[in-house]
Length: 231
Image (cartoon, rainbow, N blue to C red):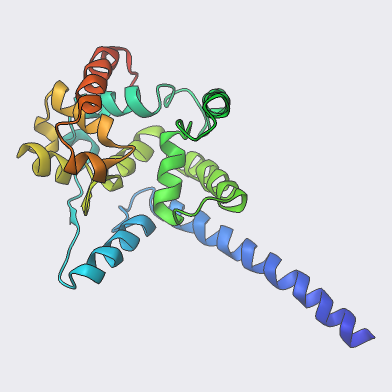
């Protein structure tokens, strides 16, 4: 009986220990990124694996550039399109999430996300694309770790350099060169607005650049950009 109790205790303690060690790993990695740039993300590695299944020689298009070498136009456009309260919230915008939930409930399907820039970064850095309550809970934990260690500007700098912008295209510099043949520093307001609109579904818009929705939404984001507060 005593042996069974010990086995039962270990069956409980081992998963708890694993979860705690995993959180420690995330915590230390984010601390390291305070002044070191991530070479890649979980999402980037996953996409590279998928690309190499079709073409073993495939590579990602990705080039890190410092925050001050990225156009303010693209910064304002992304905040206007993805997270208008980025500078004001503490990682999770609960009001935006409630609004998205109400909209999805009304439509009967998922048409709005409500995730902040920090939440999107948390997912890209460490997590898979799986949808579950456990994954979402982990996303929240990592989000608050990011906000604890990194300032808003550093969070945004990392996001701008690792976010997906097409099939194998990651970061503002690669996106600017892929779509417009210019550096991230040289993006115009209209180009920046167009890139920001592509973010929720970049691989689709990479193949459908003449989309009516893309043009209409770009015009809307252009009008909103002037009121976007930068960190």
